[in-house]
Image (cartoon, rainbow, N blue to C red; front, side, top):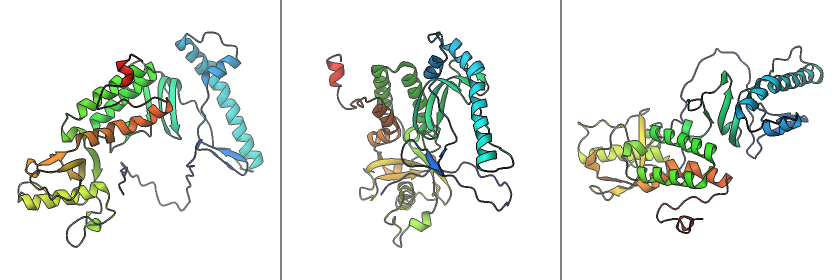
Length: 322
């Protein structure tokens, strides 16, 4: 079984106060639930078009004007209504001495794709600090997706954000497909560094068997660490190239085997900075490209009910101009 682990980026000590903190989430959509007949959620998403229609707003085509109206006229009303309901719930229904829960407007987006709770991408018109400049770093807001995960290769993160931008701004299937295929073609002709996933070498000893091989059930990136250290010994370059040690940051790629060591038992190898040429590792660029690039895009294609383009032959749709 293969699985991936998201690494903790920072831990901050806030004191030793003995109190319990609970974070409850739902597996099924829409990721909200009822607790004692109360709908529990910490976010509220509203369809701006329906809101504007309810107020008899006419200037739908003027995005800047409509967004300003929502920000200055509608958002304050929403906040007051929601905060009043929270006060009533806390003070009367739950007998709390004081309500500490308040809402604020986070963003006004031209278009958004919400996959799950805290997993979305949005084309932001107005952010928390005011209007967002077109083309700025804050124009495309991403939460919980691969482009903001530390395990995703840095160059791939940038390309994923470009994909989100093209999809949200154009919704043009051909443009999206052309970009998807062009980046795939770049990746299968790239270098191991550009396409490798990022991870950490934790619990190497735990997963190493008595014979020095990876135990059954070893995470794929740790299996790669064990294999890397094994090949260092076999290539007799331990004095020149540093082994992978517990806690090291590593990069991970799938391989088709090693030309120098055809009996290498794993389809994955990890490395720290550069993959030694002495191993003769044949990186599986097709598998890596599909893992780090195609796989994160699949959910968007499914949401739009589009078929993922073929990466081997011309699409029939392109041949016939569909």
